[in-house]
Length: 88
Image (tube, rainbow, N blue to C red; front, side, top):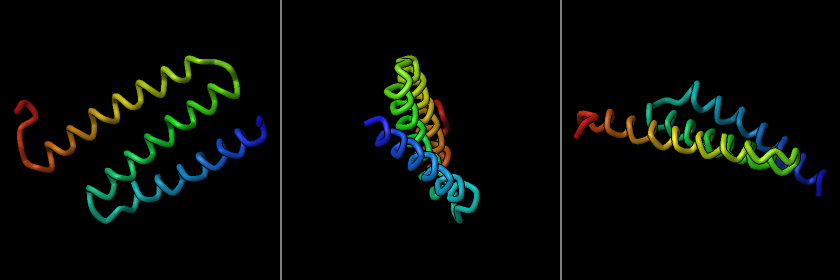
């Protein structure tokens, strides 16, 4: 099982590079935002796998904080792209 978790961890790290490519080379802002969202999902998965492998459960807390920040960023960008004020 430990080997499987390491394979999953390395696969997620590898997929992060594809997301970074999409973030850097995305033709439009929404494409880049999708890349950022998927990158955030992968980071949360990496935190979960690392928490299982190492037994340090504070990694789950880091993943939860990352999700909350990612959600707030997505909402902020959506408001910005719809040309509405952030306080509406």
